[in-house]
Length: 401
Image (tube, rainbow, N blue to C red):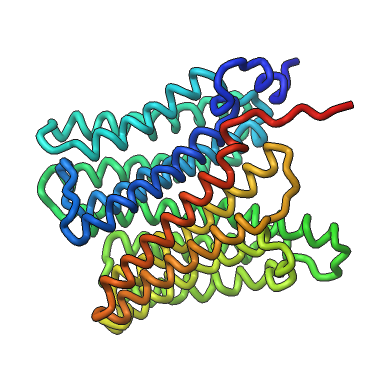
């Protein structure tokens, strides 16, 4: 039988198409840096894109459905073959899927004057095709356990459709149902998938070091309850973003997931940033829930956008960056340890998140803090493309002997 490694070696075309994580991690990081490089001068009015979206909505869509869509695709196209025992998608089929994602970025950016239905159709083609590919693999591999992940991907695609609908009817899509539903789907992916990989990777690392303190195994009864609490809070937030009951539910979800995080022995991993960053990234999930709860119950405490960025840039941005670095190292045969360049991009992203939150706390300094946040973001994702580009664009060197 053909193995995954044999399927990859059989592909003689560009190395970037030899495995799912390669085009999407590299393309997603480059897009995240380019989109932010456009957004910073857009804030001051120095750049105007020919997009039908208002500037803030374009910014939100570029990150949530552009960058996160690529990161999710890269992860799933790499993980699903491991989950199902099926062969990975490589070669021109992978290239066509990546081209579909890229077409969405381009058509949204130049959508002014184009039919809204055409723009939505081109952009939505990618998540729909990706969902169908994942469904086929799950059915063929009889991997029913991960239908939950497919369900979240379908909700994510539906959220993108709602975003386009909001934009087409002239609504402020950046604060619409589509944005909240898409962000909620992304957070549930982090809670479900992160709830598996963070304690598992932490346990593997601690066992190698002979630690006598290990994480609680994933998906115990407490974890399942925590996921249900978060799901309920996110549903309320999507439907009633300013309701007091929503604020209370988010506070409860934040507290429960903070407790969940303490069960994973993150304090024992400080010697290896590649593991520690997973815990820091996950920490932004309860922090964002708590900050939004405070902002809902005590308006003006953080600023809604600043609090929300703890989720957008913090939980999603840092968790995806952490997974991208680890997966790239692991699948290219490199040691699973964070070098100075990797640590630098982690720190840059944390600075970006903190500066963006600070802009909500000190509005008088917002222009300076927005600029700092944007530059740090570009440094993080541009840095990923530079540090990891060679691993993503070239084939692993053949071992001698």
